[in-house]
Every structure is written in structure tokens, then in C-alpha cells.
Image (cartoon, rainbow, N blue to C red; front, side):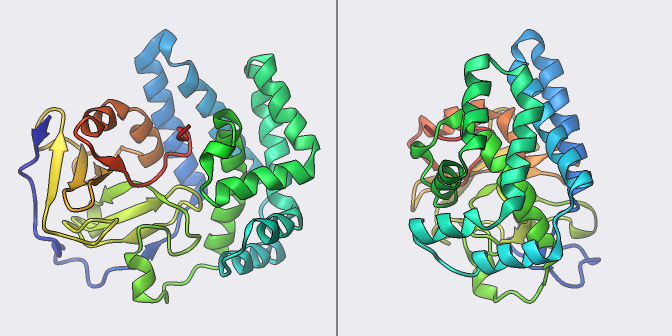
Length: 305
């Protein structure tokens, strides 16, 4: 691996950036369209080995279609936001989830779209969970508590996608930029408390600014560059690539807490999409993990087991 020498001042901004928005909320239709395009590109590049990427294309298309046909109503959105404002133990969270029909219906719809293209054993497992609302809520509670080993990885991908359709809309419908500054300095999303997928260095009107992208509600929140997203230290931050310093996909490591996060330089390549391109660059993760670093965050298409 190579060190990246392209390190800029942590507070770099272009003259056109009058102020830094603490949170950027997603435009879901455009986000899904970009994700589908990037997943399709990955699948085409892999040829016969791109089967999983082709499955994910179907899954994201199902998310896009479900939201277009069944937008989240304001009352359920408010219920979800109330849920996000409180820390609840397993029993209370499970009971609350049972009273939010939207994400359950989304899961059933997504399963209906993707089960026919999966092996029958996998499709049957997903369908059986859809029929058992108590167990479905119990499983979703494990995921929202980030207790990933308790859930089958295949189930996790589809169930998280269903939860995301609900959470992303709820957060976007209640969007506000008036978040306490301390919440946007967290390693977890200030809107829903989920982990980030990756770090993005933006281009365009926000050139040079870094945002973390949420793995659940798809919001992006600002974090100063050259500061560890996990421990906030700046003493031992390094950047790595597999090819050269101008690579659009990099790894940022922290020697103080031995964590890393994938960084996408959208100012170098604006076509990149965090979830799809993170999945397509796991060789970079494998290389840095041999150096003893552990990942901050989650790719919702690649749950840890």
C-alpha cells in the first residue's frame, strides 16, 4: 500500500462555501438511481462473478419502487423520529417497532421482489420471517442495536434495506439543520445513531469538505478532515491507497485508536457512490486490516459475521 501525500488543511473550503451545513439530507430517488448505476457497473466488470452485485441491483430497485408507490406518511414519520430521540432497551424497542407497520410492509415487499432470484432456502427463510411479526421485530431490534452476529447476514441485508426505506424518509421529512454541534462530531449519525458507511470528500460548491454518510437513513453529516472520526485525535492520521496519492478511493487510519474509515474523493471522481463503491473496493479493507486496523462503520450490503 502507498501513503497518500495529498493531505490538505483540515478546514479547507472554497471561496464559494459561505457556511458549512452540519447535515445534508438525501434525495432518495436520485440516491437510489446512482447506487443502481454503480452496482450495475461493478456487476458488469465482474462478469460471471458479479451475481451478488446483480442481486443488489434488484434490491435497490425494489427500495426505489416501494418508496415511489408507498411514500411514508407524516404520522408514521413522526413516530419514527420519536423513536430515534430515545434510547430504548431491547424489549421497549421491539415493542415500538411492532407499532410501525411501514417498515414491516417494506420488508414483505422487498422479499417479494428478490426471493424469486435467490436460492429457495434463502428465499424461504426471508419469507418465513415476514410472516412472523414478533420475530421480525425481534430481529430488527438486534440490527438497530448493532448486534449483527445475532442475525443471519443474508437476512440482515434485506431487513436493513427495509428499515432504511422507512428511516431515510422519516429523517428527511423532519429535516432540520439546527442540530447541537456536539451531535455532528459523533462517529454515529446525529439523525438516527447508525454507523457511517464511509467518509466523503465533496466536490462542487462544497469542494474539500468532508461528510460521513449514514448506513441507515442516508443522511450525511460534516466532520472536520484530518481528525479521527472515532476518537477525534489528529496526532497519527495517515492516508493510504493501493495505487497513487490521487486515487479517488482511500483509507484514513488513526494510529491512536487503530481504526480506519474508507474515504471517497468525490472531488476526484464525482461518479462514486459510497455503498456500491465501498463494496467494490474491499481489497483495500483487507490490505489495511492486515496492518492491525479495525473498521469504523458498516456497509449495509456486507454485514460482519
